[in-house]
Every structure is written in structure tokens, then in C-alpha cells.
Amino acid sequence: MKGLVAFVLLACAVGGVLWATGVLPITGRGGGPIQPLKRAASLEEAIKLAKKEDLPTIDHATKVVVKLVVNGWWSFRNERTIESEAVLRQMRGAMTVCETGQSASGLRARLEFYRGDRLLRMVNVYADGQWGIVRPNHHFHVVGCSRRLADMVNGLFGRVD
Figure 1 (cartoon, one colour):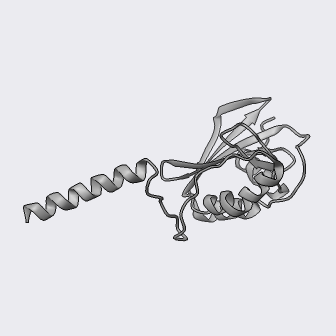
Figure 2 (figure 1 turned 90 degrees about the horizontal axis):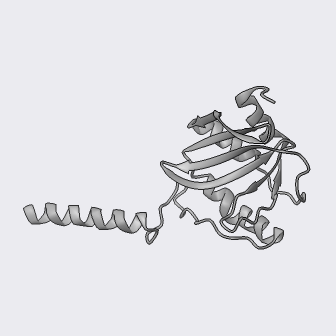
Figure 3 (figure 1 turned 120 degrees about the vertical axis):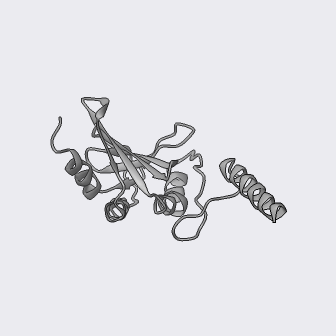
């Protein structure tokens, strides 16, 4: 019996290490693997990744941290954490992909989507509703447009300009 308990504990420890290092993929609510964030060298590639990998990965989020930009600065007191599945679904539903070009309006907020404590994706949202995924190579492409998403962000904070 002691041997079985030791084996189970060892298996759990090894599995945890493999998961934490990314060797074993974690799966989301839909059962599919959560995709690692990839670089995008062009707008076309960023749109393709947004549709096939980024938005399905955001579907697995259990919370979103919304950080508002006020007068060009990140404002830590204007930060909200949302764990409501209904609100997460609405927010994700508002993230529509479209080719829009670079936004002419100012950055309004950053959405940080998490599954537990694991950061899945960061999304910049502009005042006019355009949005894009923040990528590791600092290439940032606006891949979507949604007035509804901007309205949801504004509704969390009210008017703070």
C-alpha cells in the first residue's frame, strides 16, 4: 500500500512539473489544448492566429483583469478583475475579427485573460473599439473592431477621462 501511495504522489509531482514547463498541454473547458502565444510578422498572420488560436484560447479563460489607461498612463487604481462566466462570454463574443488597419484613437485598456493564475492572452483595446493581441515580439496588429467591446470596458469604469 505504501508503494502505491508513493507511486501516485511521484506521478502527480512529475505530471505537475511537465505541465508547468509546457511539455504537457493544459486543456480548457472545451477539452482542446490551450495554444501558446505565437509571433505574427504580418497583419495577415496576426488575423489568422487570432481566428484559429487566440480567440479559442481566450474561450478557456476563467477571469479577465481589465486595466484602464487614463491620460496616456496605466492606472492601477482603475483595474477590475472579472470572474463571471457570463461577462467573460459576452466580452469574448464582442471580440470580432476584421481587417481595419491601425487605430487612430488612443489606447483605452488592456485585457489580461487568465485560466487560474496562468496568463493566456493580453489584448489592447482602443477607444474606438479596435483591438489586438499583444505578441511576444512586440509586433502589434489591430485584428478586430467592436464598439460593443469598448462600451463594455467603459461601462466597467464609467467616465474617467
